[in-house]
Image (cartoon, rainbow over all chains, first blue to last red; front, side):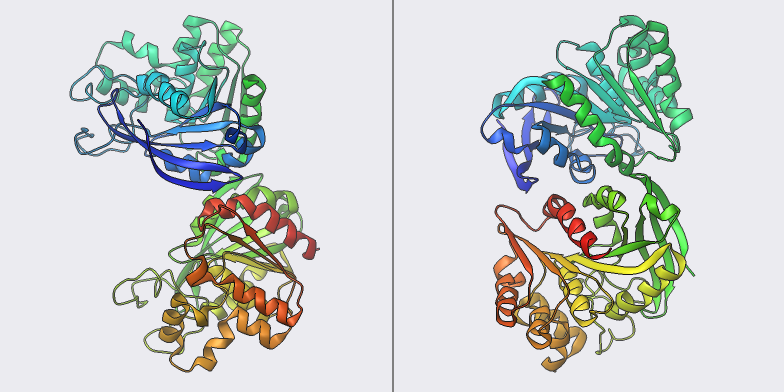
Length: 278
Length: 278
């Protein structure tokens, strides 16, 4: 069951916000979808977009300008929220921006009090996918992308589910969360102290272990304040070199961590995915 | 004197927020500018964008996707706030969204307590124009556009200053403010009860009086909640027919009053202005 909260016409298609009761997250969730004009008369492939810290489904929807190209290419956009939501869902004790609400980190929490709600990995990979493919005019071709924390989520989900996603891309992803402050805080909180559990949610470590990946594009701005300490694309790059996987990692001089960076290169990312969604 | 508050790279150009002390508005103002890549080595023409009720300079900057096309066409975007700002600036007694802060209506107020600060007409037409042309790599080719209250402002400024603006466009403008509730409230508050003063800020009435206009494009969504009561494009259309002026008024089925409507057609508007900015 999904309920339509709002619908707005955009680029000949439909930007829709849905609400549903999530059994994976044990709360009411909202998510946004863009259905391109082609979806009026046929099923279309989907690009999942995972947003970064503090975001909801609305940031990418309103700021990235992705609908224009999605409409041209006939690709639906599926845009979940970044954490479970609601008064019953525990938040960071200091309401920090990088843990708790708005900061689910796309993992399945095993620690209390997070384990009851914070299962964003299963939510995106399974529940939301099955839900939208049941209720919306989607075929089973999917790709996945995201920004920062969401770039981390997209890379992890695509590497661990190479049968589900045809391609993956990321803007300024947290490439090596077991080696950066954001990741340490999130993983110790959600997953506890056993670091072997952490490795399943670390794109760099997964690459080294799996030695395979779907087609991958990563874009990173060189004026990004979080580059060296939190994002660590060099670590991902080294893993790619070491394993001999083919991946496209691009550095863009002067670009920062904002949605202006995403907007500037979202067309390239959508065209990249379109090649693999055919 | 203008101070740079922030700068972000976007589409090869620069999205910049400035702050300055406005002598017209008697307060500190912020405005946003997009400088396309071409502005690094030559002066470029400018499109002024006037936003609607409740907006600041940030809404259009982050949601319309205009920078992509501005970068291609080599046009700067100049995006002022929608009212004077600051603790000293009086607001509507009930903080209504349609009067006072965020709702300057692009007029020069003559009534107290508004007359000290609410001079958005002179601010945009004179002070801001002279300021940006002094400090930024702009030539003297200008066009003007806007949304809703800002569409009204753009049409009025272009009609009254045909020597200053090469072309004008508007999304869902308040076409006939002397004949709608928003206009009645704003004009009686800012301008008083003498309706002859109101006519100088009414695009439909100005068209009937002036019988001339710069090249004009108006886009209106047919699913816009404000269409019949507040926006009244039929009145503008009738004035255009009556005076024999050439203008392009387009209706778009299914589109509402949101930024998704603007994003869907901003490329058309920028290309329209580019023809006249050469």
